[in-house]
Image (cartoon, rainbow, N blue to C red):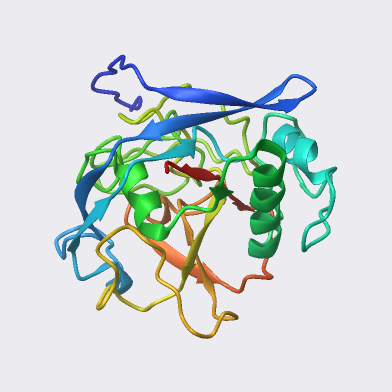
Length: 267
């Protein structure tokens, strides 16, 4: 059975392009302020216990990278002066300027943000977990911003497996260029489901009991505690690519399926 796409909509977004030099730019999309329900309802298929309780969060406006950081963007910044951590200019296992950079640990992602901030005079950082989910959902409450299921014509994941009423599809067994699908959510963001996991600022908590309601990162006194990752990747089951799915990893962990994207706060 062919994959069914119900409809596509054309929308306008507000963004700016940060010039990183040598013809490389970083598109930053305006994410409007708003309130959303973070987490998943108990009725959501294959829901994890850490995705509750469902709770309201109010998020101020900010800018977010249209795509995960690419290898060309990484190279443009990794060659700049070290602030805290040395960066390998070519860490990725799957080579390609327009593929997402991968094999990046949390410290290296933060170092990239610090160097980018120093180079541009703007304040770049990793997203908070609440910012990430708010931006991913873009006003939706379904398991994916596409709707109730997912297809390999929309995202890069292990298509041998299905979610809900979805159909089997491709298993590419590698990352893809970030512009492959040419599909964005209502905020104008692409690649929020699959391709590479994305680091967040937050430390891991087993549930949302006591979580901030203002979109800020939820941190622990122990700074060495594991950090949150979101979005799923090319190697994962579709259920792991849901908007609400969350996992954790040590800050020093890196792999062929771990990348990141950046945000810029609006003062």
